[in-house]
Length: 357
Image (tube, rainbow, N blue to C red):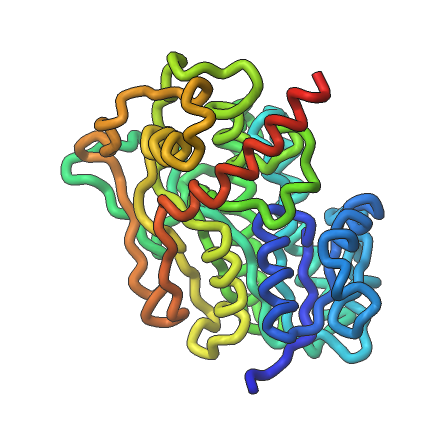
């Protein structure tokens, strides 16, 4: 039998994190799940009811992840933690205030690492949820000749000063991910912690919501799922509406990035590595096509667009990281599966939202 770990999972109510939590519990690990409010914890207790009141699952509220010693109480455990999966970081592109992203992402990361040193020196490995936004400079030209292929060696070139001065949320969000991840690597390089660090850098994350019953309005969804909902299935959208241009082609299924966290937590060779977890390209037009196939009853709603025009423009950047398979052993689901598994969930949310109008 595989080794069972005692795991602290931060931001456990998040889109990716709920899939991580489910996979951790199914694999037999013991988990303490944190969220920023008791109401978020209560929602998790409802979703994961069969594990509540068992030794496998307990909870902690961490109201402000930037506060001094924010995670200290959550990190105190008997038996002690040996793994920390840090997913907590804000991701809503809609507000354009840089403080929304920069401070919580950077301080939230350093606070948990300092807390591990103070309270939980038993932790042997930390897995950090970073982002493709830490890899690519989001304001750079996407088309080049030859096309730029990003790898796990690349870093977003935005400076802290540029991010603090910017009102573009794409800049501030991507900077938050870069500097949070950099802060973690610097912490380890400076010898402050006695743990191994692994960072995961997913691009656009799509696929089914772990528990869609938690949502009754589109605006409650995580950013990437909200985009699909808003473009294709929100109340009022029509088949004659245009399919929007694709801003980000690179993608990964939410279940696969969750699996990557478990592998990063357990595979010995993953220590000290950074993984660019991209399953390839997925366009908005492909999403529309898959949604229309999966939901024939919504053909008068989902924009048709130009169904044959699914390819990205010539010279558009790509990604490559063979270590995801060679080190982690992760393989990816298809884009068709990701969108078609999400499709009926979005219909349910749209129906609940329409009923409330």
